[in-house]
Image (cartoon, rainbow, N blue to C red; front, side, top):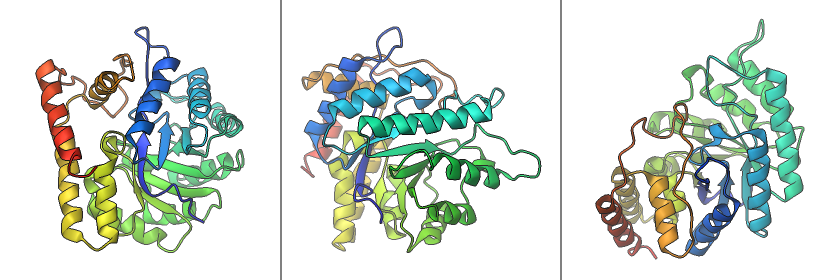
Length: 325
């Protein structure tokens, strides 16, 4: 069975940091409480891409899983449990260590009370003699799926190397693994989305749109949920896309999708905005982030969130949200 939480908005939870780059547990709890209070979220994805997953140490991964699961008892918490790697393709981790870390983190997340775990496509691994990349991807997921009884989701992040991108043939094989219950693919390519959703139609496997601007297109071909910045910031709008689509109000669904697109197009420093906005709403979160050149999620030279830009975007967000709450 496809888990019920693979529906609607799965929020990619941002990460609260202290000025020195260490995890800020109090800020993380405030961040999670703010998301809860805002509503409209079906699951909370901890150690997400926008949460700077590639900057995490092994102890960081355990710490944030413990903090989130403790704070969110009764909620659906999904924990990113891939092994430790900074996405430097010239310096990949030792394969056995990377795989073992992923298995141990999944066990730990389950012990803490997580609802599910998430693994990125294993770009950290390279084929052995006689293997294809598809072979190692399938072998990796066969191996890590033995570590936990929790449902497993796969995540193909933005910027995934072409040779590691899931294909029609590979996603079918992954969907047939009993513990693998869904996959987020970060793409706005409607052709690719249709091919992948077609490949897993009828299987116990939920396709998750990984770019909210393509949510309507994904729903048209069988997607069930969305993970993107708007799933944390404006979930009510994305839920409206799905609800209206399900009611065959296609014009209304398109109108909601356009609102979601506008909020992405006009966004400036999304995570910084979110932390400032949550703080204004009574949930203090420090503005800090970890500096890295290899995330694949942020511009190398991001625009500065000036006071004017902050106020302009806040007004836009609140005016668009008002139509759906």
